[in-house]
Image (cartoon, rainbow, N blue to C red; front, top):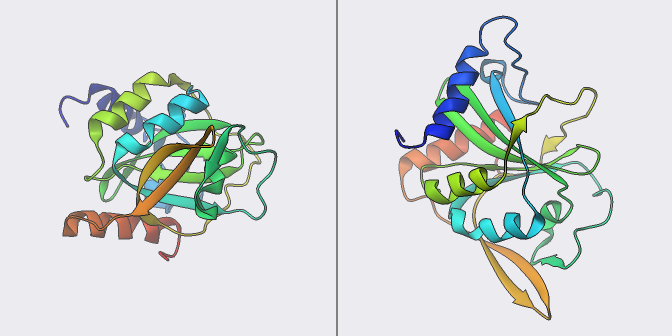
Length: 201
């Protein structure tokens, strides 16, 4: 963890944001005690974003229960299950870090063209930290403020997944497989994240 200087910087900013007037804002539908966050845009092209997902290993995937997906899906891409469909409609990505009673928490937010929340991918102890940092470094962007008046939507489920990407008939096909937590720590952390924002299904 000590070598992850870019993450440490974000967490220092989050800690500083606890002071009044520091520009922190609440995480949508998160408990009040986890409201101090730092958010930065991830400026990643579609190909880089999808190619980087399998390298992450285990992540907690939390799609939003936001009703019908808006707009057209990304061209040249398919998903193996409807559960992953929100990723096809992602038009903007953000890296988010928060200070919670359980310690630092990190995730990526996927939003559509109207900035509606589509899904979150949470960093876990089982996640490949080097791949996570490489994806963030490739898309490092500017700090971004929350857009006023945009509903966050409610999470639909929370599942431990590992992504896979393959070519099929000239298209990129994104799939995922469920994974078992390798430790009690991971299971408990995933359950707490799910409890904070959704009922675990």
